[in-house]
Image (tube, rainbow, N blue to C red):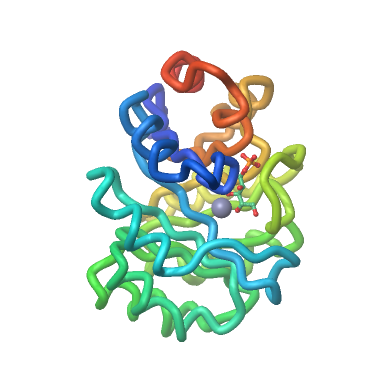
Length: 219
Ligand code: DX5
Ligand code: ZN
């Protein structure tokens, strides 16, 4: 059986939103039909950029009922999973490059959140396979983590295909999320690889009519 996703979930990345109007931007994409809010957490060490902490997550929490998908691009993520869970994260993902997934994925679940494992473009997909049974979702980076608005690295979509095959072969049920460079030009190639969820930053927040853009992503 092949998984076909005519209704891919779209997760707007608020990294590409207008930070001076962050609350309004969250409400706007919620009302426009977003499925999940993707929140990029960067520490200036694991990636050369610094973004949001648990205080921002907590401040945004009352504005929407949509799940908060916190993507931790930080060193020592084990020190921050609890603060983000308490602030209102529903999903928390951590990078395989900087932590012991065998410990951290169960710890995230224990906090009541969905647990995601992320791999950067330079990490081979084989490295994540042993953790697929422990994860609620695998986040495949399709750009080098650090900044919104980069061009998609299309080779990373082969990892999505490999994960779809692995999931089928082993009867697993983790979801597959892609992150980076998804826009109206790349969405069809991205969808063809078979992800369940697509993060969209500049490709949504850079457009005028969020509702119309979201409809086009889902078509
Ligand atoms: C990159 C972040 C992505 C990014 C997506 O480090 O993890 O979530 O903000 O933005 P776009 O869609 O503009 O690549
Ligand atoms: Zn992200």
